[in-house]
Length: 380
Ligand SMILES: Nc1ncnc2c1ncn2[C@@H]1O[C@H](COP(=O)(O)OP(=O)(O)OP(=O)(O)O)[C@@H](O)[C@H]1O
Image (cartoon, rainbow, N blue to C red):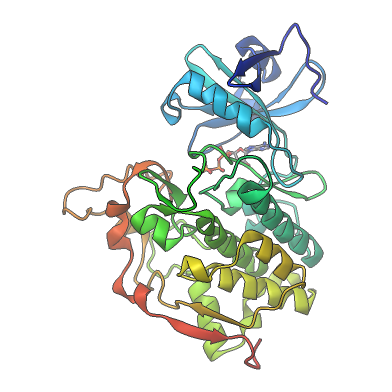
């Protein structure tokens, strides 16, 4: 697997880190000159192409717009750190190419595209319960590894179903880690740039730029709820009848049967204990207070049934039901035209320099309402 062919792949040493550097020609050959037919898709950072190296290794090449990185030296340095991370639930970053004014990342190829696609029903994949449980635990383990499993602590900042890829055996692997700024040494700090996606972002991060591991825990909770319900948290429409899954789950918990949230596609074929736990974990992880959210290793233990959850404080009105995308495109706090940089294509994704202040109008006053969900109630 990915032989280091001295003729083709170089390495660059920076501050003790070794980065595998591919040549432009090599990636050009691997992707058949970045042929449209090999294009896997387009994300907020740029296009992604499938390719094959001369040793037969299948790769995914991500073209980054040069604006997404600060400088080549820093870029290569960061790639060195990120490609040193090895975990079965992280997409392996093989290396990069910095040539011809282009920045390219070379990843292991994931055969089954993204979890978002699998859950959307638009792919031929059918995710049975056992697979969903494996995927959910895998994502939790991958995030836990980023938070505390290696020499560098990292907050992903953009955990969502499109950033979870599935390999040939439907193992979940997290992608795009490290593309946002690496987590600094302090436990809590204020980030001046927000990199996240509406619908998944923890309120304290979206509002105040306060970035800790608990921001990823929140996003993971949303993803877990999407896995169990088979529904996207963020329907990309401008309609105001958008369903905020967590609100729906809390409403069901209080007024109906929380198990109604389970994906009907499963036709009742699921492990009840695991499904209940996944819902509870989703709710406890999306608590509006970061302190009340578990750590990712606690979430792993909960999902595996090793830890009980009794009660969670949460917010049914977290994002308010009057929330819709058109507000994103509207005016900022100063009443001028939006500076969020959102385009029609990426209306739900904020990648770059969006200041927390611009996001404030998104969160109505109802988000400060708290209510207690008691998991000992008979409906769960
Ligand atoms: N390693 C990979 N193997 C196979 N397909 C991939 C790989 N990385 C990305 N893709 C596919 O390429 C497309 C674009 O991915 P990319 O990560 O750039 O954007 P995204 O995650 O869809 O959106 P965003 O940039 O907003 O996070 C997606 O369809 C994704 O599934």
